Amino acid sequence: MTAWREYLHLLQLPCYVYNLTEILARVDLLKNNLPENVRLYYAVKANSNLHLLKALRDKVDGLDISSGGEFEQAVLAGYAPQTFSFAGPGKTDTELELAVNSGCGSLSAESLDDLARVESVARKLGKTAFVSLRVNPAGLVEKFALKMGGKPTQFGIDEEALENLPELKQTQIIGLHVYAGTQCLDAAALAENLQNIFKLAKKAGAPLRQINIGGGFGVDYYAGQEPLDIATVCQDLSREAKKWPQTKIILELGRYLVAAAGDYLCPVVNIKKSRGKTFVIVDGGLHQNISATGNLGQIIRKNYKITNLTNPQGELQKVEITGCLCTPLDTLAVNLELPTPRQGDVLCVHNSGAYGYTASPLLFLGHPTPPEYLLQDEKITLIRGSKRLAEFN
Ligand SMILES: Cc1ncc(COP(=O)(O)O)c(C=O)c1O
Image (spheres, helix red, strand yellow):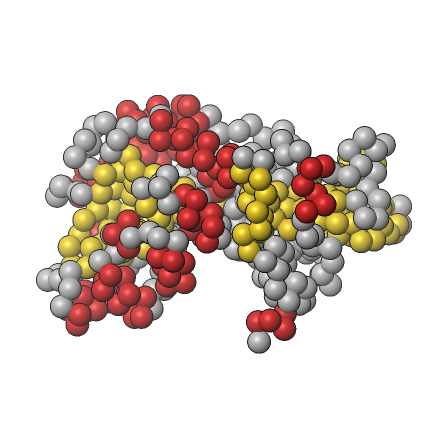
């Protein structure tokens, strides 16, 4: 738990604070409990802050990237493209050329057309493209909160269509990629997903240089949720990975590595009573932390863990916490019991390190973007400043 009293006066609010020690502890936990052929990649989309990427550079084995922008950011942070796994259903020609030209570790083909496009770019450039076939498996694993396979989708080649690969000259198929979904808190479901992936890999017949098993490890965001049993997940993965000693098994995690290490801090601007309810209105909300407002694909909106940093001993009060946007979607908590929030108090929305800053419509309504700070060894550093709307012109 961060000793906020020591830091709060140094921060410009609203803001994000990422605890690097916590992130590195998660990385170590996984690396220490998985065999050597399991390679830990970080999914940049979860949090693409340059300083965070730099801090992870010597700790992870590679990156999952999904755009030319993330590619550029990763190179700026000092990563070699040979360590990238580049996925995404709508890669442009420019992105494909960038990837093929730089020797990108693996490009995920998301359809047979995508594969043909990679081949034609590789032929045009006279280079070899390294491709993983991203497969949309026939079966659905129910326990992923957001499913990205096992149904008709823009992601991956339908398992049934894998037999119709086009003729390839400049493209080397080096592996398979399956990303079934995100936010899975059930170790048994992750094990089932693994079984499905390795079954697919066996069916492929040809030797595979790598199998990318995706990410999707969940975070216990809500009160009463049980954390993922990571010891069991590591045991299951280790057992399966050891059966493929010659193959690189890529685990590409976003949320699990960074979500719990991030806090979003926002000050209370107004307290308003309406028809028996108390609305605590903060400077912050959906435009800066869309995930916490439940608008990033969550089926049922639930309250993230929120604390009152500046009145922790206050009398408990039932409140609604809303952001400052002109939309009822901008709600951070409903019917939440919190030590009485007062104007000027600072609220902390926990578990905000993933899909917060990167996934939010930061310019919507034109508030300044929230600065980001990194906390390590009791030192807090500004790692990206705030920008006003007019600075984007
Ligand atoms: C291809 C791919 N890999 C990895 C991830 C990271 O997923 P998570 O944050 O659930 O670990 C995503 C997230 O959308 C993804 O699309």
